[in-house]
Amino acid sequence: MSVSSEYWLISAPGDKTPQQTYVNLKGRMTGLSPVFQLHIPELKVGTLDTLVGLSDDLGKLDAFVESVTRKLAHYMVDVLEEHQDRIMENLLANGQELSNFVTKFQWDTAKYPIKQSLRNLTEIISKQVNQIEHDLKTKSSAFNTIRGNLATLERKKTGSLLTRNLGELVQKDDFVLDSEYLTTQLVVVPRLVHEDNEHGLFTVTLFKKVVDEFKHHAREKKFLVRDFVYDEQALEAGKNEITKLESDKKKQFGPLVRWLRVNFSDCFIAWIHVKALRVFVESVLRYGLPVNFQAMLLQPSKKTHKRIKDALNSCYQHLDNQGFSSTMHDTQNLDIPGLSLPQQEYYPYVFYQIKLDLLER
Image (cartoon, rainbow, N blue to C red; front, side, top):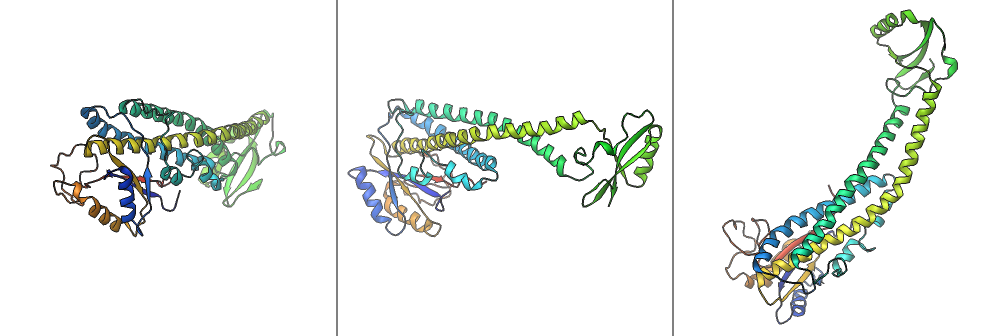
């Protein structure tokens, strides 16, 4: 993600026009932060009751869509494995870097028609992202099963002699086969048919009737008699299973990465539309009708956080007609329509964060 991965999405009432509000704030932010306009179309306002209900619902939808977007980003990293250099090219929004998409946001009227009510738009996004989450669970489960089974078989090829598949270490000539009385046992002896760093593997040919007694004495010496039957058909089947799993993984890899790329883009775009809906609803509840506000994006750095907050407070303190401080921590008894921020923090302007650190856990 971008090094500067946090944006502040705010809105303030239009002075004479929304454009003038943008120009004024841009002047106040000189040397502190770039300021971008967030263009929100003329949406259907609806009733006050609808807006108040949507304020809460959109807050929940915001958190949900962000969580699914992060899941997609994390799984992309997981799936790409050794191709980590390809992560960023697959985490784009409409082919753009995320920061570029956010700062140049344009409402997608094809996906989210502005003639629809705010409630319908919310439900469209909710249904879309719920489907993406469902499909992600299905696809990731199928791919993880193949990958897990393959990893298990590969571990058996390379692990300790105590646990690994012995089929690739022995040959037919190492065994007495098809004997009525004799059998060959494979014995793992702590540090010789084969050796690893800790153990040696020996063949011991003995009478079948004394196998149990031999195993008992072997355990006393801390030797492990492996349960192994030389079966060429079974060994070949094991090799074929690995080949098939490798083939299945390869076949699923490309389509899965493409699906993740497309749906990450769709989910991220949906998330920013939710942010736009939240700003619209909160601004109407805060500033009233007719609709006259400007949504704007700031790009703070860690060094400028406090100075930007102070500048915003100075610029918009007059909006707080009840005289509450923007850094007030006790707002539990306040009944402010449309206020869906955490109760410990209130600003006289509409404020949301957009954090693009989507690869962070």
